[in-house]
Every structure is written in C-alpha cells, then in structure tokens.
Image (tube, rainbow, N blue to C red):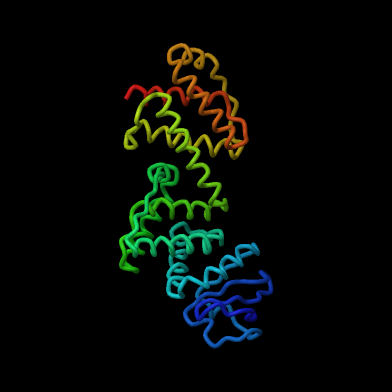
Length: 276
C-alpha cells in the first residue's frame, strides 16, 4: 500500500490495491510518514474501509476536533465489540459511535445530565447488544475516569445494532420512536399510566418489536383468526378498536401492510394492560 494522506500521528489514509482507500490506525503509524511512501498492512494495528464517500469525509472531519487519544480508545472499543460478537461490524460505526461518545463524554465532564426516554424499550428489543453496551460503558468509566449514566447504554446499544445489521441508525431509531408513540396512544386511549416494569408492558414491547421486524422483512404468514377476532371485538370493544388504531399507525410509519391477525394479538396484550 501507499500513503495517501496522514490524518494524525495514529491515523492515515492509504491506497489499497483491492479496497481503493483504507484507514490505517495504530500508535505512531502516521508519525513522519509522507504521501506516496510505501506502507505494509502489518504496520497497522487495525485497518478498515469507508466505502461511502460521505462517510470518508465525515471521518476526516471527525479527526479535526476529536483528540488522537480518544480515536485510539474508540478503535479499541469497536474491536472489543467485534470480539464479543465474533463478527466484523459495518464500518460506519467508526464515524457514528466515535462522534456520539466524544460529545457524550464532554457533556458528562461538564456536569450535564444525559436522559434516554427509550432505555427500557431498547433493552427489551436488543438484549445482546444492550449487555455488550453495558460492558463498554463500564470499560469507558475505568479508562476515562468518568461515570457514564445508564441512559447512555441505550444509545450505544442502537449504534451496535445498527452496525451489526447494516441498517442506518435513523431507521433503528425510527422503530424505537414508533413504539414509544404507540405506547403514548395506549395510555391516552385507555386513560392509564403504564408501569414500565410491569411484565405485561414488557411482553407488549417485545411483541411490537417482533411484529415490526416481521413486517419489515415481509415474513408475515397468512393466519385465519376471524372467529377469535369476532369474539374479542364483542368482549373487549375498546381494546379491539385501539388495536386497529395501532395497526394503522404501524402501516403509516412502515409503509407496508400489517396482517389482520395482529389485531387479535394486540387486543389480548391491551386487555392485560387495561386490567392493571
């Protein structure tokens, strides 16, 4: 490979014969290097490819305001995540997670609080990612001598899930916000305040996430629940009508049809919540 641009002492861009431009990272790898100079991949602690031109520009901008020691820490952080999942993460995590955590740590050091209204929903939706995010927060606390609030675990979880599934973070966030909106509609319609620790709420959130995943992947199987639907409509009309209201919200947000059978499952979940 050949050096194309030295970004700082620990990061440089090199021309790779197969991947075109690659980012090489390693302690002192950029020190004294000049454009056009040969460099071997073995001299780098890690290298990754930012195939998207926009992401390349974002990473270069990132290095203009994030100090080198934090970049090194984040590379180690991402490597830890990859080892836990035994998989290569989508490279956009180098931009997204580094940028997010840099400013999060700055806010913590300034004494500003970080709140996450979707923490419970995120943990239920992505339990494996949440467990690893919790480990990362504990590791960061030790490395930086800070106390990262638990709400930050949820944000890191979403970044990890986004990189594991090659989905845009905005799409992952959209699902979490959709569920939060539907919970607001449930509380307003049933005139209740849902206990976020209640087992029936936890079951409903898991069901919402599973349903959204199936709809997104077009994995819904045709089910004939007409007989049960008629019974539920007669027995629990308020919950049944609310179930259909939620289905319409899902369809509007996902731009895909939601199977009629969903009304049955949602009515049962809603009835359990209403009884509380």
